[in-house]
Image (cartoon, rainbow over all chains, first blue to last red; front, side, top):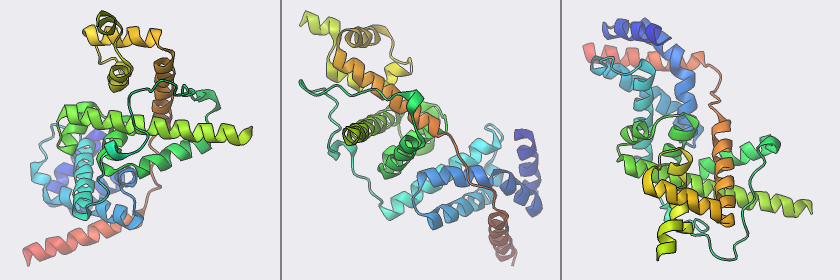
Amino acid sequence: MAEQEARLLARAREGDVDAFADFVRVLERRVRGLLGRLLDDERDIDEAAQDTFLQAWRNLDRYRGEAAPFTWIYRIAVNEALQRTRRRRVDTRSLDAVPGLELEVEPGTPAPRPADLEAESRELLAFVAERIRELPFDYRAPLVLRDVEGWTNEEVADALEVSVAAAKSRIHRARMQLRHELDVWQRGREQGAN
Amino acid sequence: MLLFALNGSHGETARHMSAFAEGQLGGYRGWRVARHLARCEKCKALYRSFLATLASVRELGREDPSSDEDFVLRVTERLRKQTRGDSG
C-alpha cells in the first residue's frame, strides 16, 4: 500500500493531478477519521481535510520519502488541526484547573473501582469517546495520537511541536482526567442501579 | 524519611503511572513505584482503574468514516483551480 502511495506521489510531483486524486482517494478516509477525532465541528473537519491535501500538493517537492506517505500526510493533518485550533483560540484551559484531577490520593478517598473490561459496553465506549472530545485540544490531540492512533511519544511530540517531556505529561494528564471521569460515571451508574 | 525513600508516595506513584504502565519507568524510581503499588491498596485500585481507562481508550480504535468520492472531487476541483491560477 505504501509503495502504491509513493508511486502516486511521484507521479503527482510531475504535475499529474489524476495521480494526486488517486492518492487522495486512497487516504481520505483515514485523514478525515483522524481530523474527526481531533476537531469538533463537522464542517471544520471537512475543510481541514481538504486543506491537508492541498498543503500536501503544494509541498510535494518537500516529500523526500523518509517517512511513509501516510505518515507524511498525517503530520500535515495534525498541523492543520493545530493551526485551526490556535487561530480560533479554542479552549486551551489547563487541566490543572479541572476539578477532580488531584493526583494525590487523599486519605479517606474511596478506592476507585476497576472497570470490568469484560463487561464494558458500547455505552462505556461512547462515554469515553464523548469525554475525549470534551478535553482541551492540547490534551486531546496527544491522547488521540498516542492511544488511539498508536504513535510513539516521540512522534506525538514531533507532530505537535512540543518536547517529548511535554507530550508525555499531556498524555498522562489526559489519561488521568479520563480515568477520573470514568470513575465518577461508573459510580453514578452503580448508585442508580441500587 | 527512610520509609518514604523505600516506599514512595501516592503522589509520586500517580505522577508516574503512565510511564510505569508502559514499562518506561526503570531504575530506582520504577522499583519504588512498584513497591508502593504492592503495598498501597488505594494506589493499587487507582492503577487498576487507570489501566482499565487506557484499555477503553485503546478499544475505541480507529473507526474511520466511509469513503466519500465527493470529497475527492472537492479537493481536485480546488487543486485544479489553484493550478490554473498559478499558471495564468
